[in-house]
Length: 69
Image 1: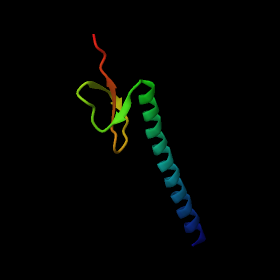
Image 2: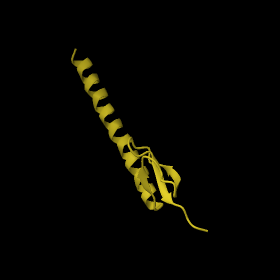
Image 3: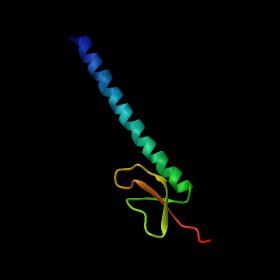
Image 4: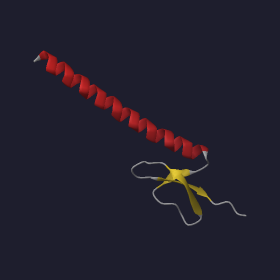
């Protein structure tokens, strides 16, 4: 039985690490959006253009003001 407990704790620790990695990826996408001079929003406004995705739960779009020609 002690071997099964070690495997259980190893799998549990691996799941926690995976959750941390996926949260970091979302933060990286938000930083990329900021670098492109955009912001993460739930919906882009009519005068903004969608330039990418933030892939966060509440703010899936990266929006940026349109350039006037």
